[in-house]
Image (cartoon, rainbow, N blue to C red; front, side, top):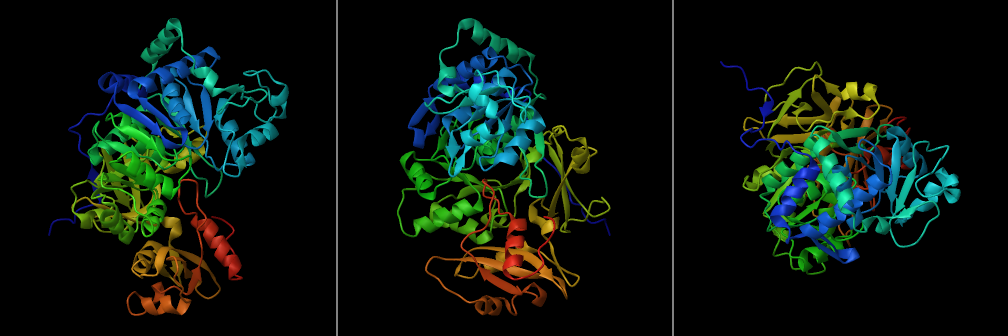
Length: 563
């Protein structure tokens, strides 16, 4: 008998990697698609061609250099989705600066940590977003700002921060306005940008993205031009993007989903980037798809669930839709089916990855059978290798659950200024994701959960994802998350937290009866709680550790001490 096939896969290498910087590749695409629409921002009433976009990008890059920033300096951006975000993304890349993405949901302590951790010399910020007063928070951290000349801040708590650039027309003491930096650059300034471009390399860091920090302080993943430019390109290839496509991007730009799977997938194919609103709004999203005749739509499962719910009561012309990406958290099979059936996204793809891998490692293909697309995250991306290993690091047979590890061009250089955390996850070039997965004989991957999400009840391992998928079959369920809560006898018990469909009511016993005889007895939720929402990050990822704490407190149980 031959040995059973091992859970190790390598991506295709017939299409070579792009060995250019983001700025150089961007310029080449502008040369090809100068008069095609590049960026439409509905809430700002902006509509730019690739030529328009390049002119503004070059002006901003020139201004940043004129203000004293130098290649390698870190510049933060703290803003919801705006045209200025895109300008910052490409202008910093052309000027050799490292863009630091600041989560729009960050508050004082998190903002201070991020700026100090990577030594930001400059910060681009919106006045605020939702309930957050960004300018107020910056002034709290740096009261010296009010008496400072723009560009010469000296703040005790933010020792390396010198320059603040605010969005909007209002003036703020100590800050410059972004609009003033978009005035036409001189020919010598444009020459300087071009000259710097010739000194940059594909492996240079261009972006720092902070992980969500759900298990401690956030870590800044250092990503290069090669990392994210190629990842965006191959995501677009899997979606079959062309210059004819128009992609609706309601996911946050501060996250890889927005700026890589969205922006860079578009720019590497000459497609149009379309932002419906500052933050996700299902009605604005569907209106943008209809008005702009979008061919693609990105979102996490919770976003698609909200859009599907809205479609029950309102009509939108979604006939132009064909593709998009559903990612960011495990994609419920039933939700995926409804997206295909109700929204016409017959070529929608599933992606799996993480910030540290730029982000995508696996993606389904537009021509994969629907059953494959709704039950797996597809096959490995080009130029990457993935293995599934057990606790001792040995590669497991196909179909066996283990930890997913990724190797290749997409893997980050490391966490910025944090060798210890880097060495914990990067071992011999392999990124240890902490995610549990299987790979089948055909190379398709299925994510079964995070190792820390496993519920261990009296020695029985329960995959929350498995029980969630079963509960989605109940017609009254809009969304569901299963978690483990403390139990004196069994160690943990399973709790199902359910958001009901609008207008529905139910009892816990109704759902327990639905499970009885259908799944193993130890997988039947011991507790069923009805909730109106889940605690989430700004990217739409559900924070299970907060949900566990919340439910444990409500049930009068001893909450976990750590995430």
